[in-house]
Image (tube, rainbow, N blue to C red; front, side, top):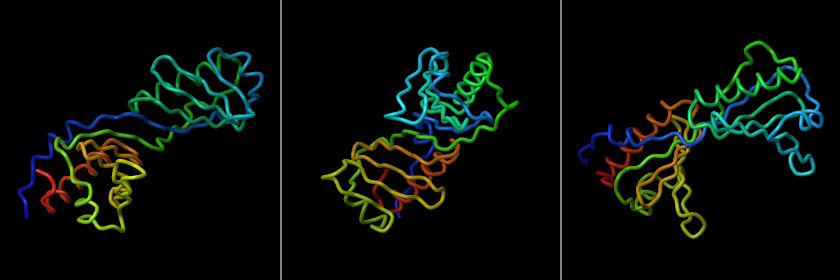
Length: 192
C-alpha cells in the first residue's frame, strides 16, 4: 500500500464554481406582466417556460416560473445564492407581488473544481476503481466519471489531474469526496 499524500493540499485546491438552489414565493406569477415590469429579463415561453432574470450583484441568474417557484444558478458560494434570491424576493415585492416572509431556500447542487496536482492514468483508474462505478469512454468525453456512494457525489477526473465534483449539497461533501478519491487512488498507487 502506498503512503498517503497529505490531503490538505488537495482540499486547498477546491473551489466552488456554481451553486444551484430552489425556493418559492408562495403564489402564482403572471410572467407576461412581470417581464414588462422587470428590467434585464429574457422571456420567451416558446423556448423556455420561465422568466430568466440576471442578477448583477452577486452575479447569478434566477429562473422564475409561473407557479411561483424559483431556481437560482450561477452563484459561486452558498451565501451568494442566498443573497441573489433575497435580492430577487425584494425586487418582486417592490413590484407588488406578495412574497412569503423568509421563503425557504434549498441548495440543490454545488459544483466544485479541484486539482490533484499530477497527471492521472485514467485507464488504470477505471480498472482499479472497478468498472461498475465508472463511466469512461475517452472517444466520447475526455474525463472519467466516478459515482461515489458516500458521499453521494459524482467526480469527474481528467488526465491533467483536474477534478470536478457535482451533486454536493454543501462544501463538506466535496471535501469528503476528495478525501475518498485521494485514499482510493493512493491505495492503488495511482496518486502521490
